[in-house]
Length: 91
Image (cartoon, rainbow, N blue to C red; front, side, top):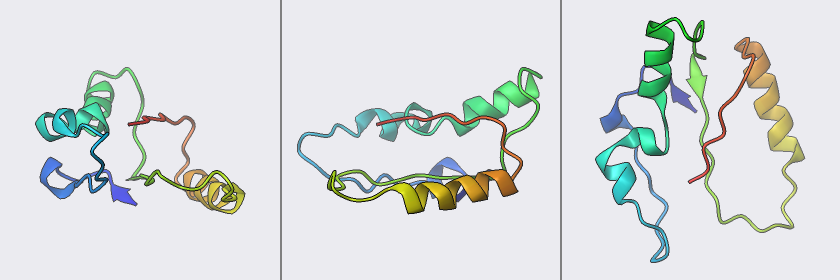
């Protein structure tokens, strides 16, 4: 769970793999987590607001894993935060 007031220095990408290039994220965190771009959309009155909390998930999970329980949990959190739309940013 990431609060909307998180600063770039507060966000760490801990996924390590020789097949995964993190240099883009290290130069501009908005490549993977466009929170500053969303704030600009609010400032420019293109969108009304952004959620108070944002969510990130770690990959490399077995395809056998059942995601439904976590998806329902996240949906409840988004509903509680009155979220009308989401951005999915796969990295």
